[in-house]
Image (tube, rainbow, N blue to C red; front, side, top):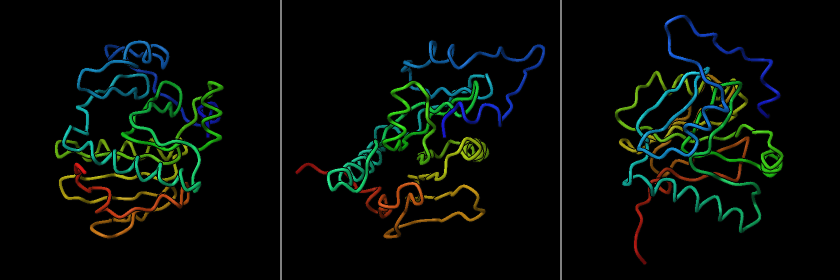
Length: 203
């Protein structure tokens, strides 16, 4: 689903007198699109939200393990598209989220090339101990409203992954050798929690 397809479905807030100034998606990209200062910036109904980046240097191996697994699927011709870190997703007008990782299929790559801002259907968030649970609950709701079908919440402190599916009240809790799946978006993307958290080594 593209941003254009959902603009009419989801209203944005109007703001209020004395509240924070509202800015557009375009202004957000100009001011924060390339900013690198240790914070993650997102646009929530026209207002800026910032938080500390979730993945510190000790957690980069998580993204590396997932990326390596994805590209092994590509080499085996089991998947197309791309798996990206820190890609902005315009969920709807003046509402932009930046998941830690996300998957775009080949058709969405074409749409992105054409300037249509497709919304990823599979996203991954890495949760730090300082993050507030209600914030991630809000993010998951945002993702599902925008057409995301699978959300993985990765908890490095407990080495656990929660798999949330759109239109389902059930959450799958994965640990150890349990397999996390990105089905129905990318069924081939099925990996054990131990492999997600596998420590890097020097060969």
